[in-house]
Image 1 (tube, rainbow, N blue to C red):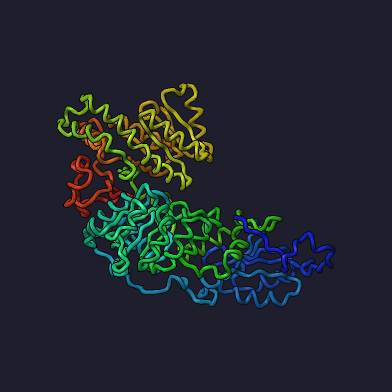
Image 2: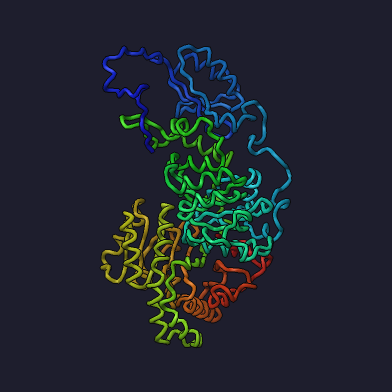
Length: 617
């Protein structure tokens, strides 16, 4: 947020200038007046009392005075008249609306009614024109609105919906509308690269005839050196999924290939600083792409300095005055002996109005709560490249011969379960690290001490404030620890033991619950989920189960679903894992991916699924 203050011309330092004649302050005694946008239709003039200004204010047709704030505001159609009249006052120093406001709301300033310039266009519905019917029907109503707006804005959008509202599906739908302009590049945190592959197959596989062979998930920089991966003469694969880390390491190699026509940047708040390697690597690709879709649940509206790179990526011409002008108006920029400090914020209401009128759409859960189920479950397939499953392959061979009904009592399963915790450590740590980037409260459940300790060390290493409750936590201290998580905004993570902290505590400050490990008793899992989903929770709760293929997770997840189904049919339970969103391949490829888990998931048709049953991605 700082930039060095330039030295005077000739390299002379300020201390060498000696006594210089003082330049008279010509603004002394003048009244300062600043125009600020307060809604898509009105602007406000912020100033002290000035008799001449008051006469002008009263003369404008749309004048309105707020007695509480002692501010005047007007319709944008009166803006030019105000400027003309205020210019006649020699003792008023006037700062008009920003160039971004003027260009965005040019029609309204000129007295034309209707939509903003950026919204003008075709009156037909782009969803029915550009997307397959099956894909449109898979969208919830508010998701259709998001995709529609993305298409109306030419496929360049900052989709900043709250966590759990389906940004992945909306982003893919927008990209699908520009299928003729692919190849498609998806840049994402490394922990969810394979989740993206399965979501592509799930949502676009049928409607766009996308196959697994069309998608390259890049796991290593070495992949770019092979002759059969990316051929400069042929260009990249139809869809490439790449992590931010690999993007920064392989930027030079990627620049040798034809540009990607469509780019999706998942968790785009990773691009919060122009000086980082990932941002430097991403910007040339985003500049070359015709369509740019940024997805983030954390748009940094309170830290506009971190938002500027994302704005530039989507619409470089929006703030024509460059970063310094942006910083002066929206970052409360201040000059100090070391340079300029852009870490503050100012005129945030105006900035949000501009962004929502040009590049951004943001809905929070409270806006669309009536369309959401109260609790949604999702299975996340961990990055296979981080799973050390080779060391437990012999245990998998033993388990494959065991009948399902005998699994729980089988001694090998307990051993397999413990070893699975060990081989998942790196993948779970990577996933939790990526979650921390979003700066949101969440709960992490684990069963084995080794897993709890590993996550504990990770949080410590990143200086994250968190609580931990396990079997060693004194009972009289649990409520105190929980209140810390509930009341302290800076306390971001609750690290809990599935069996020791799954009941009797209230953690409704979180709306995301992550299970780093499974447990074979579904009742225990449901009780653990309900630490966040209970009386006092005003939001929809997202539950994510982190599963690793080729491990005990295959068998335990199957066991959990089978036992829960028995209880449900007996009338002893109302919960169901049938509508869990499994990030999976198409049915025709069922044998290739996560076979044990897949057998327990049905394939309901879109027409048979109610709105509340549709998963969020």
